[in-house]
Length: 114
Length: 523
Image (tube, rainbow over all chains, first blue to last red; front, side, top):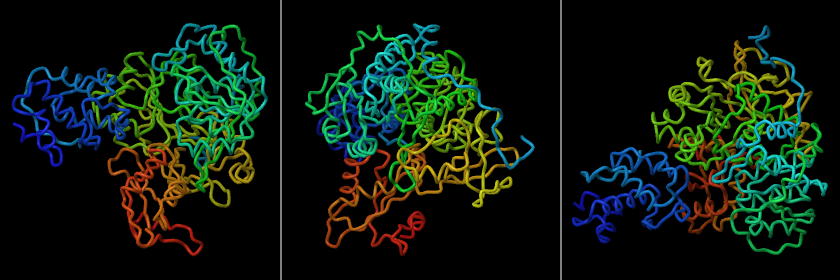
């Protein structure tokens, strides 16, 4: 349900793009949620699936670690460190998350890393 | 400890010192095909490292003069440093990716005759170098990236590694002449340039290996920048031990992956990096750190909880933390496991090093009494570059005066109380408030400003800069505008964590900022 993904300032944008709509496939759900988490953690609302660590100003070594923590907390998974080491774009991050998520699961509301 | 508990003295006399070239030749002979440096997809074997050092050394020694090495972090920094060392030339190493203002300051202060950089960096540096009358020769290392196009008024020589095999290592270096200049932030805010001899840097490496019990053939991953004392020191330690230095990007997951991929036996970094990894990966770190034989930590204080955590996730490792300065690298060490009851100290003097705490009158303090920490040993710098006044004030009667306050306990363990100046320690990087203020003052609408250290609320960096700004009357200046100007003109550690507008900066009659009052929040 789209409403569950609403985070002030972000949720509306997501619904407009429809990435988290009722018809979304598990793949696009993961993609939308990863993009959303990236936007929150890296504090850049213009982030898309195409964004890379060099194109996003706030994507530094510290925020990358925050990103890992936020992804793991929100998906309830543990990312493979060896896989993560090669991640330098949102698209690559989506692939690593998709591998870690074994089956379609009940989504958790987005929360920022603590 | 010793009979005189007021002193924390060296444990034995220094051994004789072989030049670096002997170790490089030995490594190329005994461990020819073993990796000496691994940097992404680039692997330099000990044989290749020697060939490159010999080839570049041969090029450099054709010109007599000071060498400015301006390269991005990576294996080329090690090659360039070693080549200048064996060519007997004094070199200053800077990060080619540093902000332009820092590069201008460093290059103009050092007046280099030779500039050593790479084909892909020269385009970025050429406008700085063309403004330097001292430069007589630019030497370009080949790079994997596309060469940047530029024209320069200085003669340019491009080095090719293809014919490096023909060169033989000829060592022109003497042990006690200035060999390396490293930049460190100063008490007055202006950078200081520390001049080290080959004996200084190799003595430090010998002391470190001895304390850490570094095994021959060690394989170490480090995310440390090689332009700085800690990182470059790790390269020399590994060369003395015929080992392998694996250069990691400064990202926790990549460092861990490299540990696993190369079956590393060692790891080195600053406390902020460990904090970041502990916070993100927690107990999962054990999978990567458990095989390690040693860990070296330094450059900033570390939380006790993190020290205990590392003991748990790296159960086989000697976990060694140093206290030192660029001027006196690794003057004291503590090993967490065997000295667990002393984790609140910086340990005892490193092998072959003497440390004392003295009162203002120069007399040794009694146990527990606070005074200035002074250091003696063949690792201590010979002088500051072109700064005889500072040299005279800090190097007295064979002792280096650190400007740090502390005490020695009855067991000879050194307890640090703090810095004698206002420097901030942001994740191991020393940040000068004066430098931040100098940049912020140039922002239109800023009447006055002052930067002070605040505790990082995220608990990562130790200190973070806090900036107080007084706006000119009618000025429409936002905190976001100040921050974004800082992002464009300062390195990341120097960018204020928070910007606060106030009515006036508290100052003394002489105009000095009362930082303690700002730190106390009484603005």
